[in-house]
Length: 264
Image (cartoon, rainbow, N blue to C red):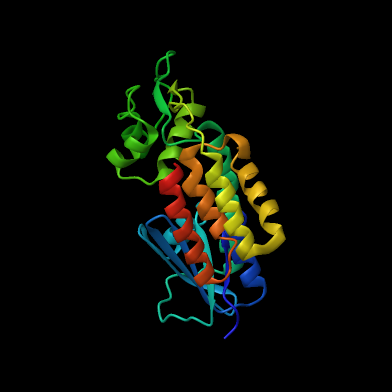
């Protein structure tokens, strides 16, 4: 069997991984994991034939999974399935996926977090504006106190669907931002934790370990000398994703957890 291909979604967009696998006419299972959520996308000779997530199957699952910006992916070559939930051509699916992500990026410019709170625009609602039922459903929940995430739960929509509706309402001038996400004071990590973490990482990765660790810290928008404790778990996850050997990766994570409890 060919080698397993794995990586982190912080470094590789899922849509790009799928384009690569498709262009090389690969057959297998692309598994995606984010926290407790898990998704699967099957390819047969480079053609995407089946996808599944907690929110559904087929194209619904495919478009949900490609929006994930965090998590890990693993491609298991030669894995097959009897289920065929996607009939559309893979080229068309990937092209629409790329457009979908461009739209998502625009939405993120206005709604970068599920913790943002909107309120009705101080200018009032124009009678000339025509809203769709799903827009009214979201608009009716906007009270200047509920977050985007809370409204998503109340309306039964996922993060993308809710954010898209609110983005449209915002662009129509019907709502405005009432409150940005609350910022908590950073609790800085004990420097000993990072030193121990880096030393163990070097044992596994060699001389390149320090460079990789520094790059990950920069990608997280932080500095080693003032790294926030709340991002410690994310740092460990992203460093772990660089370790190909599963046994070494598990050992590294277990060590990091032990040290994390001691120093954080």
